[in-house]
Length: 74
Image (cartoon, rainbow, N blue to C red; front, side, top):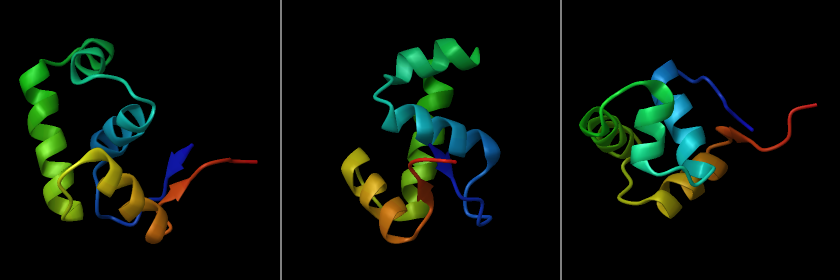
């Protein structure tokens, strides 16, 4: 799975988006990236604001509709 780089999200934000899609909790993401949970919370808020969405499912739909999410890379 990959997020297409269109300049909308930073590299860190794209990494967080992929981890959210894979159902990692904010705490797991924070641990895996050696960041605080509050930093992840802020990043998620920024991602949602940039994409103009309010929850995970809306984010995934946005990414698919805008051809930003590649499910299978060959």
